[in-house]
Amino acid sequence: MKLLENKTALITGASRGIGRGIAQTFVEQGCAVAFTYSSNSEAAETLVRELSTTGVQVKAYQSNAADFEAAQKLVDDVLADFGSLDILINNAGITKDNLLMRMGEEDFDKVIEINLKSVFNMTKAVQRTFLKQRQGSLIHMSSVVGVKGNAGQANYAASKAGIIGFSKSVALELGSRNIRSNVIAPGFIETEMTAKLSEEVVQGWRDGIPLKRGGKPTDVANACVFLASDLSSYITGQVLHVDGGMLT
Image (cartoon, rainbow, N blue to C red; front, side, top):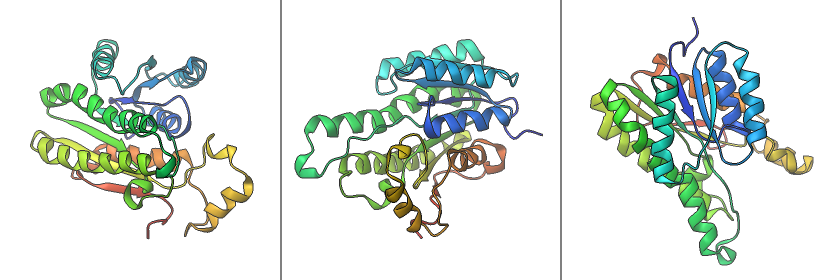
């Protein structure tokens, strides 16, 4: 029995990295997947082709989760195409790193808008559907940086910490309707982005992690499967650290 059979998930920012890993793992678990991308249509189409061989429904949507109206339209389109929606994974995010003394207002605002406001937009957009069906799983992607901070990432840390407060509040508001809201806080996950770093830098990160390795997108994806499935039906308002023990 596949853990997400007969469920439909909407994943934001899934054409690469962690989001792509989540989409692949969800399809393996029998889940129909709608996912968004911002600009790389080629990567999105490649993923759709790859996942469509499994027999479950998969569709990509170009959409900006940071735009309130676009988020509403996206959910309407997904419901029209898929007929139902059970899981929302707020994964879209960017970084614009700099020390506070050099960080411009635009770099702060953009990160907050894409990383944090998008979570409000998307959660608001699916809320009515989840309330009507009296069930749903909300999974928001934060970061170890949102828990402990990081020099040069005040904007990113603020956005990811904000996600945790938002999720806990939503868990309290919607719990009586059997709607669960949880956060995943990944640590150092090795993706296309980290591949641009030197091997020396990457090894330095690995050495500082108790499990002595970087995480894989599938490590995060498996945690998402747990929080999306009925295995976690009594879990809400929590932050699950997928970080190899970084914050231990």
